[in-house]
Image (cartoon, rainbow, N blue to C red; front, side, top):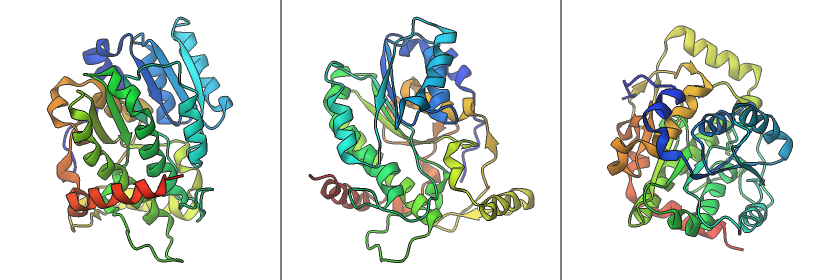
Length: 316
């Protein structure tokens, strides 16, 4: 069942809980002018963080966001972190470059890739699984010492999507079976299962972890959509036809929402004290929404199987 709570704006969440982010060091991936991550960075800049570490493939993607931040408050400190999530060596290099940053209070993993033609990364992994999931797994594990040093009240928030409802991890992938939207669903299911397995490991340090459905936001994420893709989505929206998750439960096509609302549930995961005891949860519309997850995703055996598989994928 979809969450019945109405999603709030980032401004509303920050008005309630933003003081907890003052003086904090926050790392955000996927920052660009046309992204939820970019909006998140601008919103967080209003609560006087200590440092915003803004990651993207190139600095030119981050520059418009830094300009917006400085326009609001020139005193906010930002740092560009060059990182290509499709290349594990780049991720390792990027983390090594943060040696002068002792602790990171909040990590928001927002970067994503949706529906490209089939390709493999330099590490030999299907591109969507690599960028959307494996990169997050590697990055969190490399940053773990800095995250745990930040201590109680810090967080890891992994952005997924409504695609988890139709996504599952195909542990026996067959050559030639690639379908872009299926692979996207798989990568999002992996994100959610990763957080389920990660959260108990971080809890002893007081670090919370959540996966998030930010809602349907028009952004650069849809750059690989074809005209047929757009027509199919428009038809679903206009007809009122429902989709079904992998357990056969109906749900609505999510309505388009603003970038401010898209960033809001990420902020909820960072600082909302009312969900502190629900670390590991899937969040939607600023609330815990584990009831939206189907049986494959909540199967703890799959969490362990995925974790073990991923450890093999990042060796080297």
